[in-house]
Every structure is written in structure tokens, then in C-alpha cells.
Image 1 (cartoon, one colour):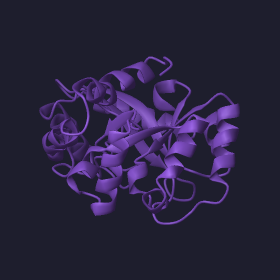
Image 2 (cartoon, helix red, strand yellow):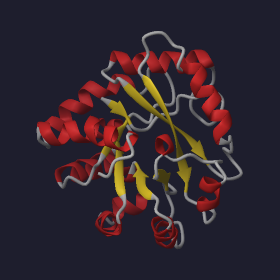
Image 3 (spheres, rainbow, N blue to C red):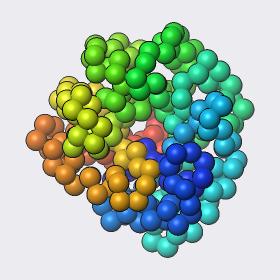
Image 4 (tube, rainbow, N blue to C red):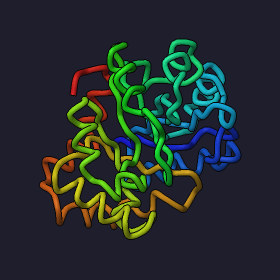
Length: 234
């Protein structure tokens, strides 16, 4: 499997605090079935602003972990009106240097004109992936938003933990509905600490198997992400 969403880099956001924690999480990922991990540290203006070259260096250091899964660079970019500049100036990162961009919205409030930002990025040949939409209050209260975004070309990444209630009942019911309607393209742990996310994976997969086909689950846990890493169209 490929973990599409993780916070394994030490000291750059609210994820791993030390290199030792990072290595613990990486080996936990292997233990629970992942052979590749995409590092998607937060990039948020005035909050988490570690540029790409520094994150690349940290990731290269972690690649020396013996028998570890393969590691790839990305970002989870908090939506902002200058997101295009962040990408073009190599502050925030696309997924493995491709045109695919993982971004997030505010969890509990509406962000004005975010569809205009999405259209601007798409018009500049970027392909957008929305991180864990099941966690956003706006989506929980109006599921139709996902169909609107999907029609615009946005893809969706869901968190394994949502299937086991890790983010509350509303996130759980929303992600189950997303899975049943095949609106999920990628799955991620959203791991921030050792022992918190990867141990949830087996139970989450069991819950998912009761809703979706084996073939669809394989696509969203592995082969779709493999295509993205290779820069292929999904």
C-alpha cells in the first residue's frame, strides 16, 4: 500500500517532533502494510513555512532508515490566494514533482472564493487533490459540495482513521458515504505521532471492505497513488 498523507518530517509542522519519532513512524508504516509513504508536511502561510529544499534534505536523511518504505516528497497546502506563487517559487511542493497538488480547507469554517482559487490552479495545469474532505464541517453539512468539486476536476484523499471514528461521528458517516459513491481516489494515514494512526489501519480496512469492492479498495490504497507518483493521468 501507499500512504498518500503523512507528517513524518521532524520539526517542520505539528507532526513528528524528532528524527527518532520520524523513524518510529516509518517503521510502523511498514509493520502495517505500507511500502511507500508520501511526506505531506503542512505548508501554511504565517504558520508552517519550511521551504521545499529544506524538506527535501530532511527526507533524504530519513531515507537512510534501514528496510524502510520508499519515501516521496509532497505538501499539504492550506488554501490561500497566493498558492500558485508558493508552488512556482518552490516553497510548497507538488506530489513527487508532478502537477498534482494536495491542499486543505479550514476544518470548521468557510473559506471565501476557494472555488476561484481551484479554477486558477487548474487553468495553470495543476491537478488538485483535496485532503480529508470528510473532516470539513462545510462538507459534513452539505455533501453535494463534493459532487461540485469533482465536476471541476478535484480528486479526494480520505483518512483511514475516519472509518473508525477517530475524527468523530460526522466524519465517519461522511467518509462511508464517500466510499459507497466511489468519490475517494486516495487513502492516507495523516500520521502525526508514533502509535496513533498506523495501528488503526487493519480495523479501517475491515470497515472499508464491508462497503466497497476489493478492486476499488486496491485502487485507492495503492494503484491510484502509484500512477500519481509516476506523473500519470488518473
